[in-house]
Amino acid sequence: MHGKIIALTIVVLIFVGLAATWYANEQARPEPITNEAPTVLSFSDCEAAGYPVMESDPRQCKTPDGRTYAEERPTPAPTYKNASADLIRVELPFPGAVVGKELTVIGTARGNWYFEASFPVELIDANGAIIARGIGQPANGANWMTTEFVPFEADITIPDSFTGEATLVLKNDNPSGMPENDRSISFPITVEY
Image (cartoon, rainbow, N blue to C red; front, side):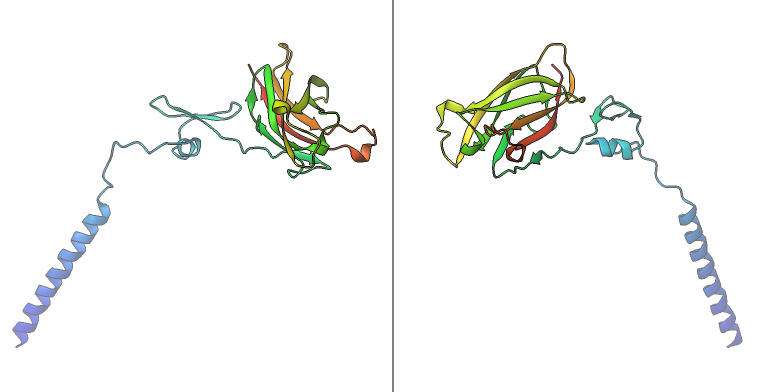
């Protein structure tokens, strides 16, 4: 009987030793090496993969195979002064848009935004100087004498000498001249071409 216990103990020790050896080998085994590059479908993927980021404006990241991804900026929100989207809505250009030297502003405004079927539109540089002016007028001869939304268009020609960031400002036509009746919507755009 004593011999059987010794034999069983030896078998158990051998089994434990084999299991411990197998476990140690599994832990020491290196991860398999793959030649797969990380999946990159955006600027954030590229940056997370550790590829070089260029400090341009906007920042750009380049993959080893030559693809370049630009960092997307959040779309700026329009700024309203004594106004809201319930008075005027601009469809084009949208806030943050890149535009050319010939620009048509398109949207809708309530009839009381107009006076004598027009309202002023301005493009202002970073110093507050007016770069260009336009006149918002009802599109396709729409009737502006209402409190409902009326579609408008305003053509603006920007001087060839100007490129860069600017602010588009659409003002209500305020025949009273009283500052408390001034209303506007404004947002940044970039003039490039």
